[in-house]
Every structure is written in structure tokens, then in C-alpha cells.
Image (cartoon, rainbow, N blue to C red; front, side, top):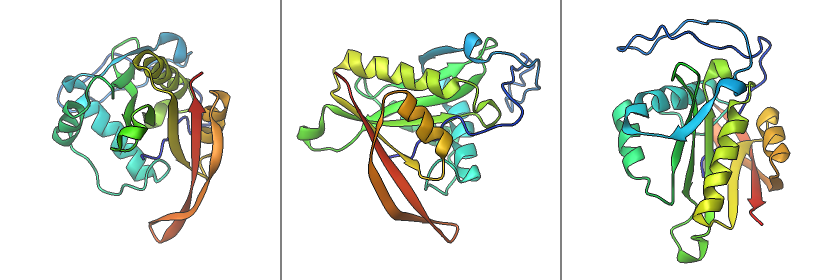
Length: 202
């Protein structure tokens, strides 16, 4: 189960980005402050999104707010990961008005046992500079819509207990706290508590 990271608190507010994108490093410059959520499009991820997915995932790894993973991922590794996701485990991205990827989410296999086939594990990661701007909400809503269409009975996830904005967002989206794994992982010499959450799709 991946630990989800969504919408970390930001003092700067939402930022929209210009279309000055370098095809080699996908760099960008801030354009104007505005309503990011209003300009978002959520769509299925493609292999061409692997670089952006790796970039955003690595930010979550580096920031130590998102996952117990410590090894950075490459675009090639994420492309293979994308290929491993079939129709029951979609990967989606949220893009701004210029097509720049601001976040990604996925429905993952919770457990290989057949009894768990109707439970989907949720992962959501948001671009560092776009957190707390509605991107996480759009991705969670997109994943839920797909989970319902596929026929899942329940969505589950885990979040760091210290990531209160993420836990708050999931509660707002109808998830309930099941409990806490205390000292679930050792990250940079610090034991991390992990909150487990669920939403039954009635």
C-alpha cells in the first residue's frame, strides 16, 4: 500500500504555469497566480507521462511527506510500472491549461488474493509547487469515478499521521480513519506512524 501525499500546506497559494516548456528537462516558469482547479483536466496517463510521473513521485520521496520509499525512480522504471497497470488499475494525471502534468493518481491491487478483488488501493502524488491548490481533490474524485465504473466495493489508502492536510482532504472526500500503524517504518532515523483510511462505495 502506497502512502498517499496530497495538497501539503503552502503559504504562496495556487500558481498557474506558462507554456515555456523545455522538451529536454520539462522546466517551466511561473505565469500568473489563479485558480488552478478551474483550469485542470484529468485524463488517463500514457507512456509519454512517465517522465512527469517520475518527477512528481521523486519530489514526494525527497520531501519525506509522501512515502516510505527512499530510492528515486527513473522515467523508464515508471514507464514499466505504467505498462503493468491494466484496465482494473488505471493511472490518471491532472494537467493544467498548457498540458503540464501537476499530479498523478492510480488504483492499485490491494492484495493478490481473489477475495480482495473488489478493493482498490489508492495512490495520489501532487507536484510540489501545486500542492494545496485543488489538484489532489481532482485526482481523488477522478479515481473514485473510475473505481465506481469498474465495480470496486471499497477504496483504501495510507497516509503519514503527520500529513494532516492529506488526512483532512481524504476525510472531506468521504474516507474514514480505520486506525493507525504506530512506528510502521523507519525513515531517516525516525519512526513514522501511518494512518489507514477507507471509503466504501455505496
